[in-house]
Amino acid sequence: MARVFYDHVWKRFDEVEALKDFHLEIEDKEFLVLVGPSGCGKSTALRLLAGLDSITEGDIYIGDRRVNNVPAKDRDIAMVFQSYALYPHMTIYGNIAFGLKLRKVPKEEIDRRVKQAAEILGVEALLKRKPGQLSGGQRQRIALGRAIVREPQVFLLDEPLSNLDAKLRVNTRAEISKLHKRLGTTFVYVTHDQTEAMTMADRIAVMSAGVIQQVGTPQHLYDEPVNVFVAGFIGSPAMNFFSAKIKSSDGELELDGGTFVLKVPKERAPALQPLVGREMLFGIRPENIHDNEFVPTGIHAASIEVEIDVTELMGNEVFLHTMAGDQKLLARVDPRTRAKPGDKFEVVADLERMHVFDPETREAVTTARERDS
Image (cartoon, rainbow, N blue to C red):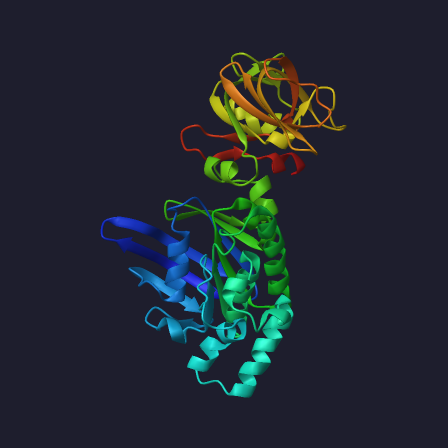
């Protein structure tokens, strides 16, 4: 097993900088997820670690070994791609064993490893079949099995669930998490799906335009995003943002959004006092906006008059797409709501859970977590 260390790595393709001063340490046995939109550089980072692309500047270490010039086959890693890349003419046993046969591993050892991997993944009954006889989820497990038998120091997974349907993605996500715990190996996982990142990772590195924006545990990124990009990317549905001026009235602070005015909770006032008179960008998650009839106890309730555009029934909750003047707000409310499109409606925001960002730098000024500090 091994730690992975990117030491100020740059990758340029002609004039395009795919990675910019990428600096990241992944601990031994950690499950680290690189997440971000298409084109952010996450797959490039994985390919550099795998040895499939060359580094422009910087160093990459696996364990204590600098691997910049080490061929991919000698890096002691195993990679699982979005494409299953199984040989259709071979049995499942043959597909899983193929890499070991190329390395001239003794036959008895190959048999032991293949059967052990099949047991781990629950595919013992499929070993005599061929890939065309398997479902997408089964094929993905075989691709994982082919990586497991390598017994590598590091597993690299590049969007392995993208070709699966929604139900299979949930099931396979859980299987990969269990596999990581069972193997006790370092996993580096790339995805654009923040739900995968939140549910699987020990830590997440959020990327944008080749730059790491923030690294932390899923809960830390959710509670304390350092900028607007991370705040909007982590969480589903995405955080609401609205502009408002901070004003002082009768010793209390207010957020003046133009068509609505919200009183700031006393616990949040000290952090915002230096910003009085400034137009700031506020963020609040949809789950912190409630139907006025079904407000949880113990929150700082600030009412906002909105007009309902669209309602989406999700079964256990309803998404309300609303307009507060010219500001869009999405709320996740109790399924008993009576809100209908076209209604003038009152929602309640929990301002203790709000985030505040500088509209120019887009950096966080205060976060929801600070109320507990």
